[in-house]
Length: 584
Image (cartoon, rainbow, N blue to C red):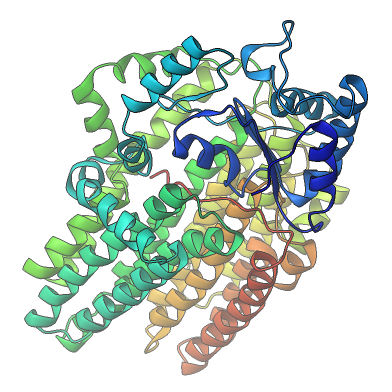
C-alpha cells in the first residue's frame, strides 16, 4: 500500500505498477468496515468495482482507469489533493475514486457497486460526519455480516436449517487456515466417491457408511460455496469444479448403489439410469426456461405475481422450495434411505419424488409462459439453439427447410419427434430397422423444430424434449437388448452426454457462449447420437457387441468432451463466476 500526496502523484504511482496487477484507489479519509472494502476491492469477477471512497481495477480495466485519472488530474491540477470536495457530485462521488468511477462508466467500463447492507463505507468531510460514521461502523459487527453473507440468500429448507448453521463456521475455519474452495470441493468429491464405494459393497454396514459419508460430502459441498463467498475466492477453475462435481458425485453414487444391489442379487441399473435421466431432464427444463426469459422485455405475468404473493407468506416459501426436491432434500433422502432400506427403494423414491417435482415446476413454467406478455431477445433464442445441441443432421435439415410458422410449432414438432423416437424404441420389435427409420424421422423433425429462431412463448421446451428423446431412447434400447452389461454401458454413455449438456449450460451462464461447433459436430448432436444407437441396436441385435459399442461410444464422447471442457475452463477466456447452486 502506498500513500499519494496528490492526484498527479497517484497517477504516477499507479502507472508504475506492473500491467498484470490489480490496482486500487482509496480515499485517506475513508471510514468503514474492512469487509466493505473487501467487497469493493477484492472480488475477482468484475473488471472494475467501487464503494464510497474506494475504487479498484483489474488489468483489463486499468487502461480506462489511467485515462480517467489523467483527465481528472488535468482538470483539477496535478498538485490537487487526492480527495477533494465536489458540491455538484453525489455523496459517494465527491472523491477522486468516486469521480474516476463515474468517468469509467461514462467511457463504457462497467463498475460494480456491491450491495453493502448494514456495512458502513463513507468519506466524512468534517468531525461531526466522521463521528457519525465511526459510530455506525462500531455498532455493526462486520464479521457477523460476513458470516451471514457467506450463506446463500435462497436455499432449501434442509440446507438452511440442517447444514448452514454450522457449515459457515467450517468455511471460516478453512479460510483462516488458507484452504481454498477448490480444495474443499475436491474433498467433497472424494468423500462422495468413497460413499459410492461403500454402497457398492452391497452390505448393510456399507450402506450405513455410504449414507453418512454422503451427508458429509454434502456438508463440504455447502462449505465450498460459503468459503468462496466468505473469502471472495471466485475463480474459473472453481466455477468448473463446482459446476461438474455435483453431477459426478450423484452419478457415481447411483452407480455404487446399482453395483451393490447387483451383488445382493437385485439388478437395478435401469432404475439408476432412469433416475439420472429424470434428474437431467428436470435441470434442462429449469435452464431452458431461465435462459429464455431472464432478459425478456415486458417480462410479467399473473402467475408470476401470484408466486411473488405466495412468497410473502413464510410457510408457503418453504413448502414450495421443498416440493421441488432441491439438492439438499434429495441427498438427505438418498442418504437416509440408503442406510435404512435397499437400493431399489432408494431409486423408487427418487423416481416418484423427482417426477412429482418435475410436474410441479413444469406446470408453473407453462402457466407463466402462457400468461406472460414478453418479447424474447436474440440472445435468448441463441441460448436455446445452443441448448438444443443440434448436430449435422438437424442443422442440415434446418438449413434447407423453410421455417415453420406458428407460435407453438417448434415445441409441438420437437415433441412429435421425441414421441416417435421413444415410441419406436418401446413398442417396435427390438432390433427392427423401423427403429432406424424412426430415428431418421426424429432427425428430420428436430431440424424443422430449430429452423426458425426459438422466440415463441413455449420454445424453451424444445431442448428438454430433445434431452428426453435421446436419453430415454438409449435407456429403453439398452434395457430391451437383454445383453449383459448393456444398461451399465448406457449409463456411462448418458453420463458423458449429460456432462456435455451441463458444460454447455455453465458456459452460457458465464456469458462466453456454447462449446465450439466442431465439438458438437464431432460428437454428432443429439439426433446423430440417437440415430447411431438405433443403428447399433439393429446391427448388433442380442449380441455382446452392443455393450462393447455403447462402451466405446461412451468413452469417445467422454474423451472429446472432457478434453475440450478442461481446455476451456483452465484458459484465461473462461468466466470467473461462482455457481450458486442448482435450480431444482
